[in-house]
Image (cartoon, one colour):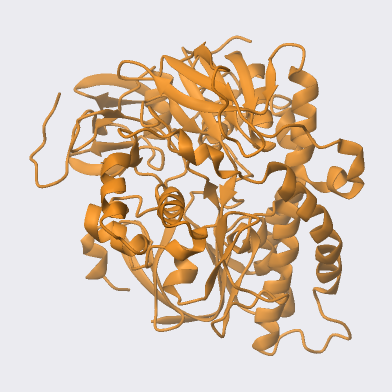
Length: 463
Length: 107
């Protein structure tokens, strides 16, 4: 088994920053990413075989920060392994990777986990219909593949992402019939000069809104209720919501659409941290489980660091600074960079202290509120993969299931191919609500390898 | 803004044109496209049927996490169309429901 000094899982802004910091200190670095190209979720490049026309990608110019990180990273002696999925972590820091349907085993002397987040799943009646899509998926289809996934789109969600995606879709000729934002008001942009100057998502959101406001109705305190149609989305029904995002009866609106784009924020991907036996805590402000870490980005497991949205969803600037800190500390532990008078990532520590105040305010505005968990009905498939209805889950809960793992073994919810990513948060809410206890009593699904499905062949082909 | 084909955007040059087989019919795509992109560009909505209830499923998360967009590629089932590039001569079959020990059931 090959040994590498610093292994970074995830090639988004956090992973790239960690790799750069560690490589600049002198460590040998390997970056692993499941996608075809590095850059992460926000930096969506068309395939290498495409040649973009100049001037047709104006919104992409906002991604200069990530582009610069990528250019810097490839200029250093950093090894990249893309189209590579880390499916297991064993015995501390033994990483199992699948590359081109073959298994590779790597021992990481130091490991930085910087996975991308995934979109908060909001089950509602009709959410499995073709035409219901996540915001990031729509964004990638438009930016990377140059394909509009539908003709008449309604956007529902909370947070700046959907404004940017809606603007792009509109600009490219599709019909955006409306945008429903669950939050009551937009933040006033001038209050946060630092954020406005740097945060890519905020720039885009403001630009997008200015572009669209005359043409597309944006309804605040408004959210999805259900999707209807015969074999695909044909109608979406929305309603006003109160401050806790509970729908208000009598305020329903029906939209004729073929595509419903849903973006209610992000949650951290903690599966790899869980496999590595890092302590994971529930953070109520984010309604998300997050690996426990200190200001040096160390997890509870020696030698393992976490950074970026995998350490709590905070966007690009936070990701880059956390990555620098993690990478610099990983290298320091191996003896690299200790000859410097100040800590190599000292400016990142400072910036994070300043940003944390703004972050708290931003979190408050678009903080997920659980009223939307109540829009399901008995037939809603809360577990999409195994097709488990709310009715079935209620039975298991009434039978006395104590935590998520019991719900899973009794109903098979969470046993499907997504491995609980799209049902776990809602199940936790349902269980906790039924017991009158806080959400964290439900726990998380015990993480077991493989963290995503892999063909059984790779267990027998070792390199 | 003019689009090159039904839902393909005019943003520059794509990879070379290739032909693949979609449910037994020849279909045009471009090198670099994912199977999901080629299918959505062609207006296809149902990518597979769910194993138990045989309900149509499609592109959902678009990031490789949800496993809803699966199709059968060259006879291999449960391939994520959003994460797999189209290749010349590829055979893609949709509407297949595989799971729970069922044999393929095409509707």
